[in-house]
Length: 60
Image 1: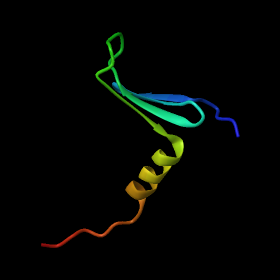
Image 2 (image 1 turned 120 degrees about the vertical axis):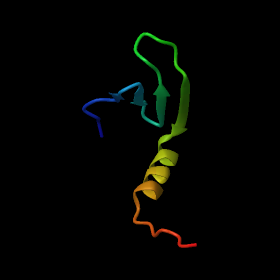
Image 3 (image 1 turned 180 degrees about the vertical axis):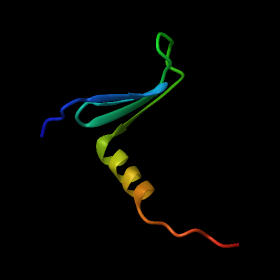
Image 4 (image 1 turned 30 degrees about the vertical axis):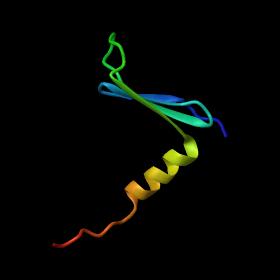
């Protein structure tokens, strides 16, 4: 499967898909990166699945 594009910028953040890994970086245009994380694609998919699933809220 081929992607139409391998990156996306949103504000000061960008994401890059390089096949087996995904990199998310916090970086203003023309500046050095502030933070960066590189995770295996399968791990990111698990995190996204958890984040987007229906969840109930706790009551205290």
